[in-house]
Each structure stands twice: as C-alpha cells, then as structure tokens.
Length: 96
Image (cartoon, rainbow, N blue to C red; front, side, top):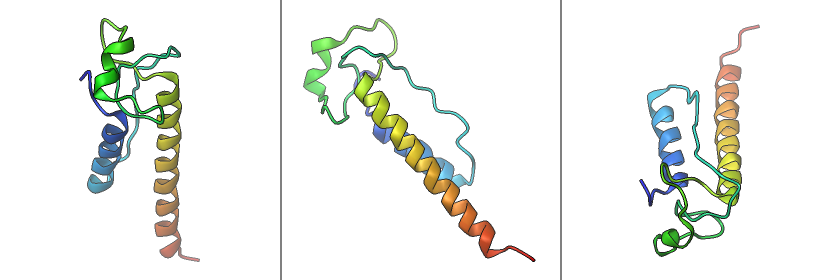
C-alpha cells in the first residue's frame, strides 16, 4: 500500500502474535537511506499529502532513513518486553 502506516502495521503484527501465543520470527522492511516520502508516519510526520513530493520507487514503497531507525527501535522495544514477560512467567513456575 502506498499510504500504509508501518508503525501501525508493526503494532498489529506483534499484537496478533501476542494473542495467538506465537513467536514473531521475522520482520521484512523495504527501506532506503534517501529522504523519500513513500510511507506515512514517523517523527518527520510524513502525511498523505506529502507522499507525492519525493515518491521515487517503481515497486514497493520504502521507509526513509528516519522511519527505518524508528521502526528498528520499536521492534527492539517490543521484543524486549516480550522477553521480560516470558522470563517473569518462567520465574513464577521455577522448581528448585
């Protein structure tokens, strides 16, 4: 989707795995170091109206450098919270 919101998609991806008790094994991101406006969102606040200003791809929309870093940190934080929750659960049922 040209106007997809990657952060919302990422949140939904992890939410589904949390609800199903499955492990999110892979996240695939299309990204570039260029200052493109191909996906909405991010701290630079790319809005729907901004998409056409620097939309260069002929295929899948890509995250710009700022959006890529933000999502990498969001993924890291979500995985850290999952690990902490799993460790608390294991600790509650530890047998000595």
